[in-house]
Image: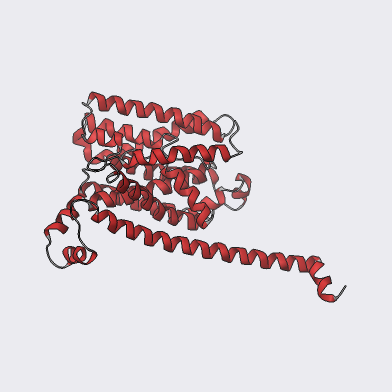
Length: 355
């Protein structure tokens, strides 16, 4: 046996070989993540311009830019007033719901946690519907009440699921029950209101057809704050994936951070629900696909989920307003149709969901 062969089979040689293998694997993951970010950014920009041009009015990119920044153009002005708010709300709500799902999955250590499935969105929706139906004078405080409704739903799910610890299966089952309860209450209020496409009905059905720039201005500050907080907590989310004892030994106040991150997730889900309506499965689908593309490191997963969530919900809305033209299918229905089978597949493939 020559010297090179001895070194190859020695413990030191094996360690060096393993180190080189790990370094090569990290480089491949980083390259794949970078490509995923670039592709998603290009797809989002392309979809944005496609969504602007889908409808009876069509303008080229050059004409759109001139109409926005150089000279008045009646077609561009119409698109600006009617399509831009809807597109921006789709992108903001999609980003917020996707990141909310990432945060809930980190906090609850449950990869099936989703603000729609566990009842957060329906709790926020019920609070928003309640204010819209019975206290329209408090309309500008709807986001605040939606946040409180989301917090109430989260507390119900958390407290009712606790039985000497949190079981992933109990969280899902209790969440489905809480979701059904608040959804039923919202539908009842909508029926009492006449069932027309009022503010109440648009929240219940997730319809964003008639949204205006006022709705965009309502959504932007809350989503901006929530996303900035989510980015700030990416390192903590990585540590929460460890055992609690390990996280505490690294100086993390686990319980306090779980509460703060949970409130951030509730804020993102609730505010989006108050404006765009309840959106199911988006916070489940995006994080799972994101982990396949950029890995489980939240420093990459959270910003990627922002892009991918915005793209996914805008795509669902664009499909919804074209597939049955001149009629529309709300984006929330599109997400439910796609997300239901996705959820079942994940549930069947997982080995973790025993009580």
